[in-house]
Amino acid sequence: MTFIKKNIALGATIGEIYREDRWEYPLEAIREALINAVIHRDYSILGSDIKVAIYDDMLEITSPGPLPDLLSFEDLGTGRSEIRNRVLAPIFKDMKLIEAWGSGIQKMKTELKEYPEIELVLQEAGHAFQVQFVKKGMAGAESGQSEGRVELESRLESRLESGPESEVAFRILAVMKTKAHSRSEIARELGHKSISGAVNRAIARLLEQGFIEYTIPEKPNSRLQKYRLTDKKKKG
Image (cartoon, rainbow, N blue to C red; front, side, top):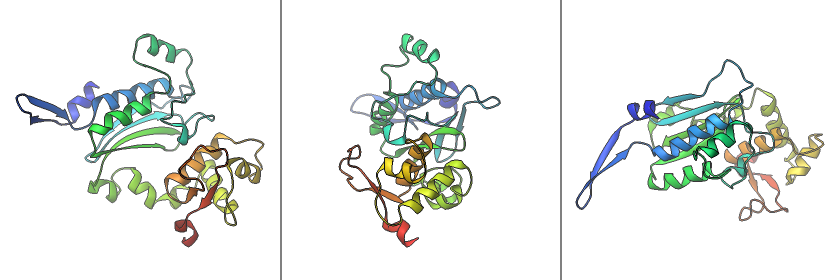
């Protein structure tokens, strides 16, 4: 946090009586992201550390290790939590650095309500998990300076061309060419005995990038939920 405060701007506005300081990014949201990075990183991955990067258009925190297999992108912010480090996490809770299990993402989103110009982006990058605080409308994100949502959308196909999860994503698109499928049906079509973490992550990425969509968008967690190709993918 000391490094971050030294490298982001502190502005000020004049209220009715007092001057009000305002950081370039929401510090409480960043604090939650850092705590999550420490608690949930995969410590079995040697030679890789938690990284904080500050660009003109965003602040990025990268933690080694993808989401746990039993946790999908759709679960983030819903209160559900899978504790990877069962020794470390209770210590942080005892120190009152954690208020409740699974509350970190929701707290970030709450803090960002005071920063409408900042977008929260959650993604897996290689074998790591990233939290990005991206400035909306900044040219840097469009020019390829950062790995934010804008660039990911324009480069999805190339990013899916390598790695085991990329192969799963392409196979899911192939399965869904003729009709909508439920999550369990997708897993079965791929020859999986159960819904694996790789399937969950691939579905979440395809949803995020607009290649597939819910058949019941108003109820994302419905037991009747299925997924279908969007017009974007059909035309592509």
